[in-house]
Image 1 (cartoon, one colour):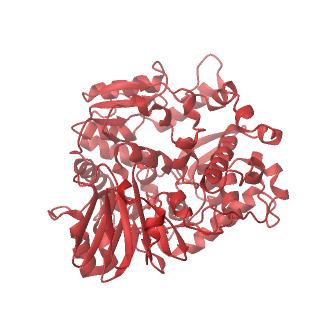
Image 2 (cartoon, one colour):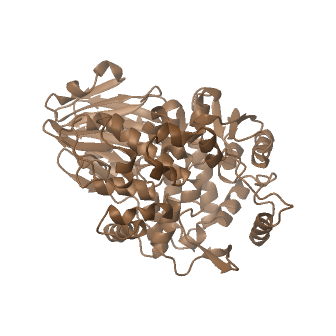
Image 3 (cartoon, rainbow, N blue to C red):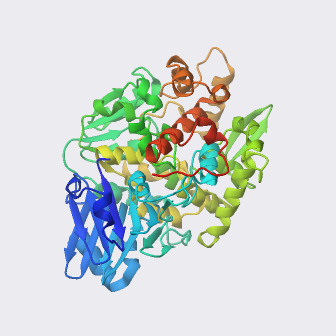
Length: 569
């Protein structure tokens, strides 16, 4: 990978066996750890930073800002504050980052509040090894075994939940958490605590915070691009950022969404380019699958085949805007009528958390016909998911006080779309606006019924009254009800085209490229599964085999893992 954080806690010489020092930009040799960083943007304001002095070391990796008004270099500031207040220092940082601090011969590695970066670790005879590249961490682990439960979660949900991975001795740092040489724990930055509505105006607060979040990120170097759709989220960035040079939209040039995105870019003085996806849209090669980290589906890296067409240094996107600001994981109210589901305004008064989360992850019932043979504890994959969800609700129950926030919390902790962020950050100076600490704080202070598109639209209109001059093509009316009626009519009336995605048809591309024959020769039972599930099986089979042993798994092993699969990396 182009960017990496890697280290060994309680190092006893293992670092030099696992990594080449010249391949990193900086290596910090401490009394209790050796940690290295690679990032072409190191030293730019808001980017990765390192500070060392007689007290110890601080390495910050990713996109990091100190509190407003602080002029001290951010890594030095963090070391100073850690000396004064301990782990509370991490709550003062803003952005999408990982932090390492060594002070007084004690070392700690911490995530940002929303764990927008996965950091993996494993305990070895030579110390606790950690890093952003799980395959390098795995290389230090002797005699690991496949985690059957983790593999089943990936196959049936599209995500491996919480701290688990598909290998039993490889874990991720906990959500809102940290590791030391011997401990693993959580902090208290991501806790739902609704503010007093008399003192906290949801719309005004959101407008001000969006404005500041984008302003913090407005001075990155080089040519600046934005992945722009015709929807609500990414247009907020081009409307507020003073220096977006070019916007990119994935799709066919004549698709309505691409045309709207082109109009939005022109409205704010940016150039526009359509990214016409080719066969690489299906993400079946190892150089894209590596961004799945073995815990997420690579299918979410929609733009991966178009990197050569994107001539920018810095890239922005709207990822997580819907998650933090518009309630993506919240169960919306709906009614069933004549076999059709009609969305209504408001929240479902009696949600089923397992059904909500399984639909937001990657569950598909087509896998159930093989499930009873594979895991005797559960009859169906939905039973497995129900068990996973219940376990997570119990574990994190002190961070929420209603069912809606519980669903949102588990969804955010295991967000399926993170590979989108990982790939961009590895190839550009990537800015993750929605991970701004003020926007996360708004999410935690705002009750679930107010975290919706209506609130966000009011907020961004305060910043730019003309922001919705060009409406999303699938929401042509200001009225929510009228939009739902038109969607229904377009689906049912043959003379009117239904609303559609600008992205390529996945099923059609899969068939045209004969991927059953190429990916799964000799596995006819796999051919019967939905395309997304087949791509998921290809993801994890290739990732695990390339990580430890090219003959470790077959596609059938992914769907129905044997009780024990030992491996030697």
